[in-house]
Length: 314
Image (cartoon, rainbow, N blue to C red; front, side, top):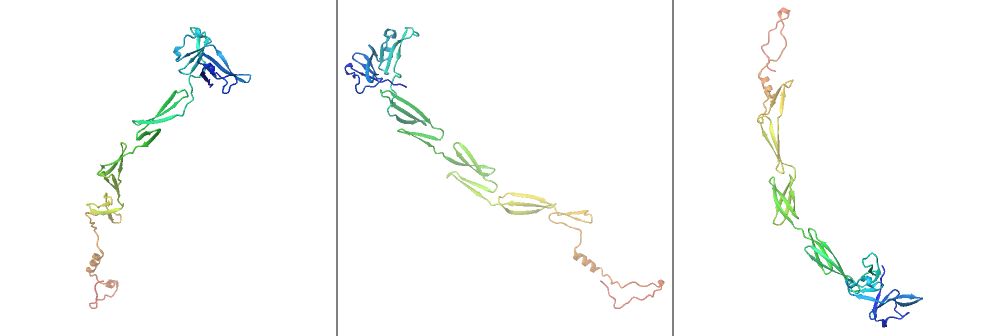
């Protein structure tokens, strides 16, 4: 982008050709004679050359009169540093228009920028400001919005973003007669339950949740006689009881055709004990076998039975 430099002053102060400080391409506007000079290289010598016989100077663009009455004349608009010339233009109703000559209305050379920050309602605003060479202020700003659980503060040109402290509360409930710890965070809750061998104690005043574990294993075994068999109950260390029934059967006979059950803890079998059998055999008093007695009919000699030294029993 090209830049056009203008100087203003009395014509008597216009630098002569070749004078030190002349800048090629610069314009000199004489405020007493209203002439415009442009510095060009004239065979190696920088020389101010007049460009027009009249300069129209106004404060605002609205003060310019119809361009058709000023064809070939220049206009300088102070408010905005605009330099224009009236030229023919068949596209306009009057047949002429004012055309800006310098590439821009005001200087964009900025001074050192400044930053300021402020915060309100969880929104921080950062404002940037700078001043141009002809005292035109430039400002802009952007904002930083805080989300849930975020704090935004500002001091000077600094913005601080911090996370808010999130409170955690402890309450308790019951589930199947067991204590349940409930942790509440940001409106959400989490339940902590104990298992079969775990018990919980919730101190909601001090926010303490105590977890106690019980060892596994068998605490006790109980057996009860039934009219048919037995009931066996096992209680674990978690005080949970499990039970079942058993019914033992004893069969007798070569074909196991007869069966017997425990009734109220007792089974009666129709058999003798060894002692009962021994006692029965002793009570029979059987004689000792001494052989056969001959028969006269068979030609044998009949002998009289002895009456002395005879023994009885087994």
